[in-house]
Image (cartoon, rainbow over all chains, first blue to last red; front, top):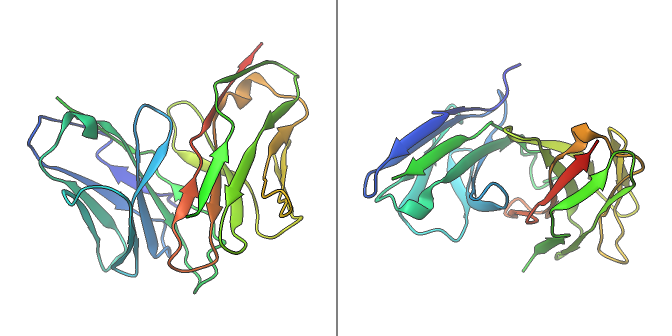
Length: 116
Length: 113
């Protein structure tokens, strides 16, 4: 069974441009999470989608946005790129089960965004 | 709000040493607790988990016990190996469909041969 896949693996943009990152969850998983990992360590929560809806959002400006498609894949868009947006963007999926959030997160390998 | 505090790194140990990485949490109710590991150049993967008080999660020689009285979930291993060098994240997840998943800041572990 395929794991969580992310594309592209690497992306280089310049300031002011837009970046689009994609994530395909594990088959059957309805929830997708996006995290930013800067400086190779701490994860900052960006967005959580479940069943096509945005469930929660981290403390990021509105130029970070996304969506989840009917097949549960997801897209993260970053507009008006700034140098500090350079980071590893990690996507994770899980199988939500009503309110019982005891499930494991399965992570992709990440998309490394470099803003010049 | 909910939070997770874990031991700051980097932690450097010799092979076969005993490892403890401290983790404490604050949460409303009783969250599920996890340790994730990120090996160099890879994504995160689940190492172990515990879903209720006094549960012990274990995997690959690592253990952590859910201590409600001290709100802790410390990670331990009796004898570390060079291959354990990685970044370790303590994570809590509340019992609510609207809960965010809270990551600790991560602890980088380096094991010397």
